[in-house]
Length: 134
Length: 126
Image (cartoon, rainbow over all chains, first blue to last red; front, side):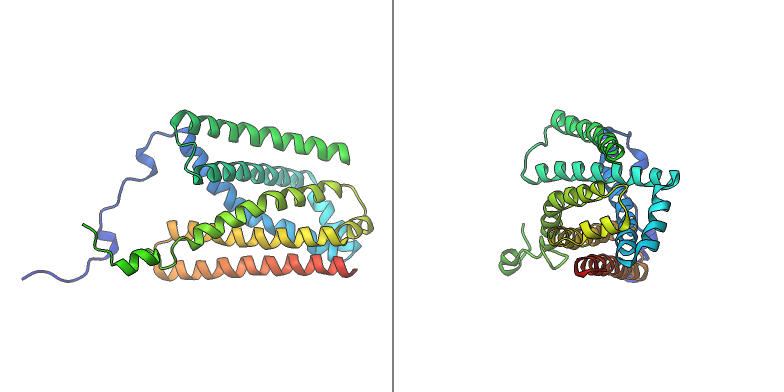
């Protein structure tokens, strides 16, 4: 007689995961797209706090500004802007792929490098502008 | 051999039951985010080092209010769609997954309302 009891999910074989693959730039960039997206997700709390403080009054706004303006605040905001730019450039790559273009390996490799370099350059430029404006 | 019925094929809803709806909205909000996030960053940079009165006046001007409201709407929607995929990919226990998907929706909604209300309050005068 055939055993018809359903198997628990733990007994099913699992397909090989990340650890079996050699790390590559394109793979790292794919992971970074998700990591930066998740970081921005929680980073939006900082944006909400800034807007809430501005809407609440001078006292609350000055408090938030002093926290964001501290060295640790600036470090977090620097990371935030880098994640934002990285995720947006990564998103542009995805939009290109969505049209069915840019799947040739040299193109993919080049776009990954441009994404990484572009995010670093643009973040530094933005912060230079920020310091000049201040 | 194709086991799909003609009706299933023409509907194109797939196993998730909603076809490309999620994927499409992710792209719609992604494209909307490009100009809106650049605008948001521009407004933030413009207000660096300003007093509260100056910032409140800038954030409260009609064009800025409209731009920021659109940005918040598109961003929080995009966030919810993105995190939903992350949860569905990595959380396999059904109960935990549903709880996290609910938390995701609530988190993004609270952020949208908090940001939206703040922007409107600035627009109508603090």
